[in-house]
Amino acid sequence: MNNHLQPRRIVVGMSGGVDSSVTALLLKQQGYEVIGLFMKNWEDDDNDEYCSSRQDLLDAVSVADKIGIHIEAVNFAGEYRERVFSYFLREYQAGRTPNPDILCNSEIKFRAFLDHAIQLGADTIATGHYAQVREADGLFQLLKASDASKDQSYFLYRLNQAQLSHAIFPLGKLLKSQVRAIAEQHELHNYAKRDSTGICFIGERPFREFLNRYLPTQPGEMRTPDGKVVGQHIGLSFYTIGQRQGLGIGGAKEASGEPWFVAGKDMANNRLIVVQGHGHPALLSKRLTALDCHWISGTAPLLNHPYAAKTRYRQVDAPCQITELDNGRCTIDFIEPQWAVTPGQSVVLYDGEVCLGGAIIE
Image 1 (cartoon, one colour):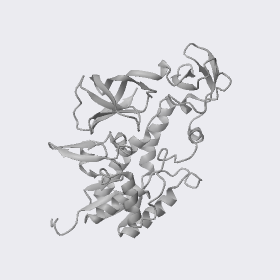
Image 2 (tube, helix red, strand yellow):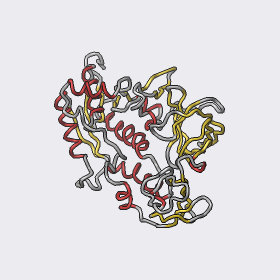
Image 3 (cartoon, helix red, strand yellow):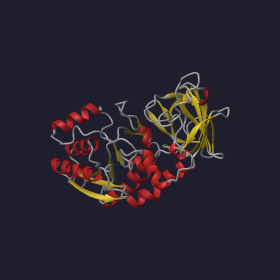
Image 4 (tube, one colour):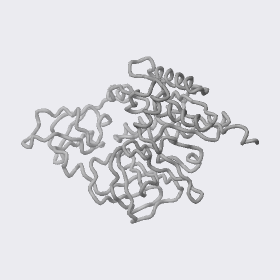
């Protein structure tokens, strides 16, 4: 093949947001043949007030037009429902709090999307994630982004060697403020567009209302760890560990006057365990066990070696060690107690800037 005659083709996942728009622009400027791909992953209620996918598609098309690249829309709603949403519902029914964005990355953006890109004749995909990939000793490493406040390696920890070898993240070395400045300078109309928040398919809508469409409410008692009944819950699926808002335990302030927090779930008896005070011991853990370990290099990290971990996105790295590792299950001990460690969420392990992988908190 005359590779030197034709520019390498890269398919960029374009969401209509500023990050993926600038990703496409930068690659075009570097001389690649860029194709934009807009993924539609959710169809259940596209006509309602919370769904922005139609506007997002218009934004993506407008940007592609402005920078002079071809864009196509592809529908992965079937794969999404089967691989991500069904898991999401199962986890909530079991009383855990899943992170569907992590699964969406490993199953949709870097699997279904990558397969589609290869059909389009590209061997590389790019997204607007704030992260970096580096090749070292024949292995691909996932690194944190330069902009620590935007780093998204946490959401990418389930990628494997094959997926990383086909992926690039052009924003990895940029600050968010620089990305917006580049967009404005090149007259991309979405340069000031608000970052999307919330879970990919729920968007901005009230979470309980959404969940209630798919899961029944099963009211029960709210109790303190010593068994005192202080209120009623609407169903264990609708609460998460560390939650403070929406508990409705107004009159039961007790003597301390401190706010109430969800500290645990007694699934067998359909009871929500609540405590008073942000620093209550029931909210703190120095050890966790996690399942379904995934290591990016294909090799497990070292036991009893100093690493750092996040038990939720946007958390400061916490010094820790893996003390047990067996059959896809690990035990992690922290130097300092971690607040509101939540079953179903991911613990993600780092060695300096390198994301080693992680597991799902049990």
